[in-house]
Amino acid sequence: MPAASADTTTGAAAAEPRRSPAAQPVTAGMPDVIGGNAGRAQEQMGSEIDMVFEDASGQGRPVDDPAAWKICTSRPEPYQRITDEPVVFGVVRVAESCEDTVPR
Image (cartoon, rainbow, N blue to C red; front, top):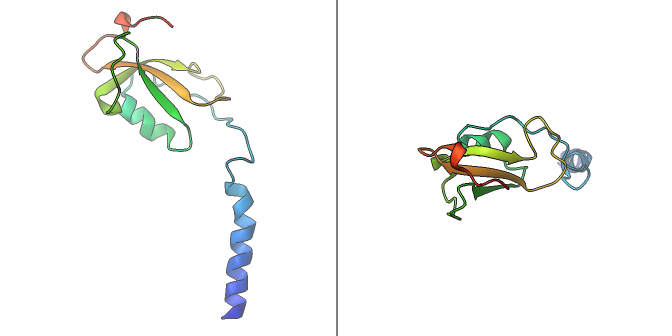
């Protein structure tokens, strides 16, 4: 048993530096999710990226359920490198048009 315990400890210690989020800055690429469902984009990008959803209509509505909203804008823009967080999505309700958004 002691030998197995030592191997497990060694394996965990060796893997730990690779999982450290502080070791590397964010260097992912921003996918083109414009026009897509905000809930699906949130799932696609995963929990490792900090995301904020803002009402792009200018009405200041809270975005409690991203699946009920579609994406009109993103910061950074599609295909740009994500170098800073949070990633910010300008969204409107699914039934609304992105053409009615307030420019930022």
